[in-house]
Image (tube, rainbow, N blue to C red):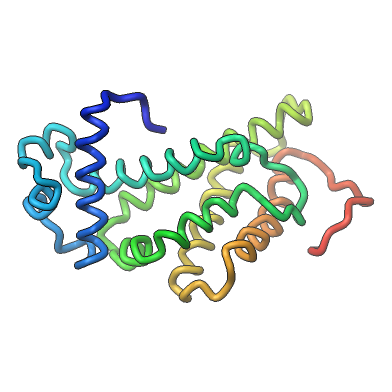
Amino acid sequence: MAKKIDRRVRRTRKRLRNALIELILEQGYESITIQEITDRADLSRATFYLHYQNGKDELLGVSLEAMFDELVESVQDLVYQQNLDSDEKQPPSLLAFKHVQEYSNLYKSLLGNKGVSSVIYRTLDYIARISRKQLDGLKLEHQIDTAPIPIELAAQHSAGSLFAMVSWWLENDMPYSAEEMAQFYQAITVPSIRAALGIERDKSEPSTYP
């Protein structure tokens, strides 16, 4: 996640991020040039490369992480309060689905572009890091010394599932609400999380799902 950075640097990066997002929404990602980004941000190319030596892919990756950081920081307690109730009405993933819904045009444009695979992997890694923290919290809460499945693998599984569901949701014009998608994701992933941690479900616990 993002480290603390100088306020002026933060302002410059935000101008570049906003310029990139505006251009993506206007013309898609692939055709955007560095010159267009700097013109839109009213900054020089030298300033751009001072921050992003690897070009617009790096800017996009950092920009998405910054958006995710802002989302997580705004509701940090909720994000890390993962539980093992498949019927949870406000699961942490709801925040992700609402975020994607808010920026649906941006994410549709990016997912439709096969040239941003590196950014997709970066996004998956970010989600996996969040999932790892949730699983570490559950492991501590349930006093688990050694989980049956490596936590890192379980985190990657959860991240991949969330990304796949979000991608399908966008590609199919979001036929379900963010709330419904979050509950579907909870119902699918809770059993796998229980298995990864070696936690059996309380048979008296009510559930809408099998």
